[in-house]
Length: 92
Image (cartoon, rainbow, N blue to C red; front, side, top):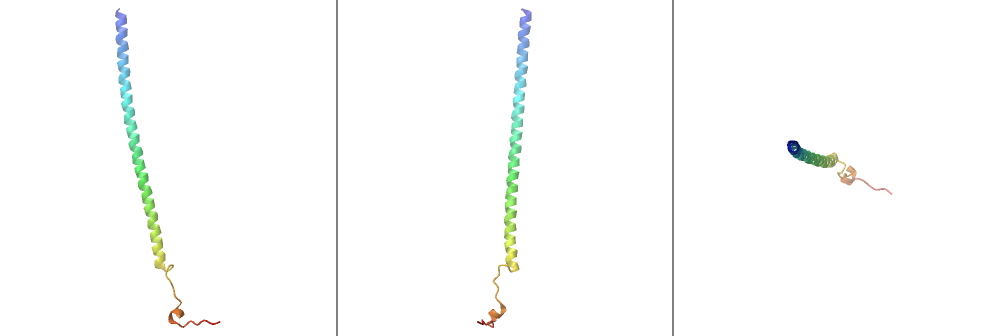
């Protein structure tokens, strides 16, 4: 009878240790899962910011490029000096 009671207590003791171990592992798993999700969200946000910066930089390059072309005279309408003075004659 003593042996069966001791065995029962031992089983209960091991079950409580197993339950405690399981609870700790579940908590650790949840914590790790939350940390991973937080890191992923942070990485996604950083990637989104990089994409927005690249898009913005590309837009600025395009705008600056067009402005510099206009300022350099590429898009300026030019008139031949003789035409402007009315001195150019057309010969046939």
